[in-house]
Length: 110
Image (cartoon, rainbow, N blue to C red; front, side):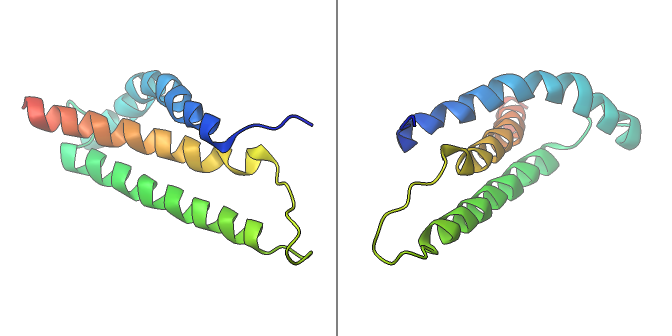
C-alpha cells in the first residue's frame, strides 16, 4: 500500500479551516443569531470556549487512537494502522481553530 508520513496529515487542519469558515459564516452564525438575537450569533467568550472544548475533544480522540495503536495483540511486532485513524483528530482540531481564532480576533479588534 501507500505509506503516508504522519507529519503530512497537518494539511487536514488547513483544509478543515478552509472548508469550515464559510459553513461557519453562512450557516452557523445565522442559526445562532435566530436563537440568541445577538448580531454576532454567539458571544466572543462562547466562541473561544467552544474552540477550547473542541481542542480538548481532539486530544481525547488522539488518546483513544493511541490506546488503540498500543493494544497490539502481537507483542513487540509493529502493526501498521491505516492513516485514516488519525484524520478525525486533525479535523476536530481544525474546527476548534476556527472557533478559537475567530473569537480571539473579534476580542482583539473590539
